[in-house]
Image (cartoon, rainbow, N blue to C red; front, side, top):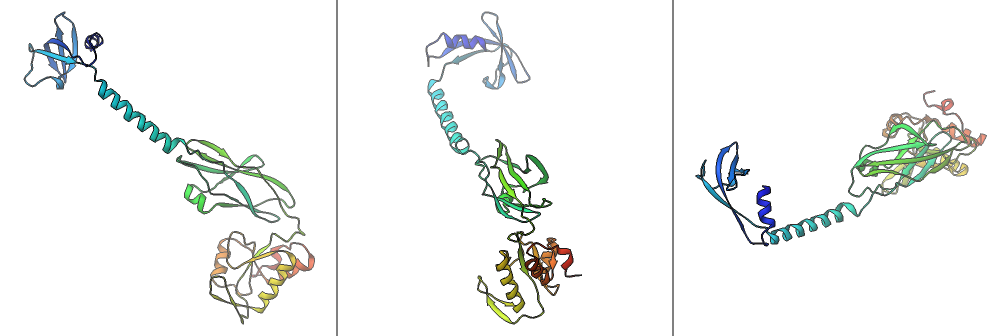
Length: 290
């Protein structure tokens, strides 16, 4: 093939160079060709005309196809630009970590919707005071953007922590902002968030935001006033933000969900004791099953 190349280099563009060969033999898809100068070259036999065998004389014409070369270079340039526009202009963004809620012993952290461009989501890690927490967060981008929060428990009372998350993608690792969180003191009751279950009496009808009507016990109304006075919150549903579930009767879907989430199920007296003592009371002394 070097012989053919030399002919092409010495010939004007688009001017065919004709070379004559004698076929020596054809074996395993390759033909051995002999030039008039007794040089041997290998040539793909599939390119030879039909009926050619050992001893046949063949002529090969070659030229540089500049038009096709220009067309292919143009197509390749268009492809490169399309790849750059699709995959090279949108880079993954660093995660943004925020505090959702905090109590004396745990914090709920959340992050904005993750934007990783066209890269592949690998993993998401949580760091506490610079050390990776031995737990995996959501394992897919869809879950990470749907359930964009995590609850970390076992924290010390009135202690300051630094949290961050690390997003690992196919194009690299991206770290979030460092979020400083300080847990509450025992006399800070703002982190309490309760959900109410079944009570012994339900006589008042209250309209809910979704248009339904909820039967509320008069005692629940009084407990909500207590919650307002101590600066706490309540929730109509059992969510990750709920710290205590208050009821008098252990039944109903909310009770079952609170039990499944390991949320302390306490008597109403627990909330009253928190207000009277002006500090968080141990749940164990007010468990409903006690």
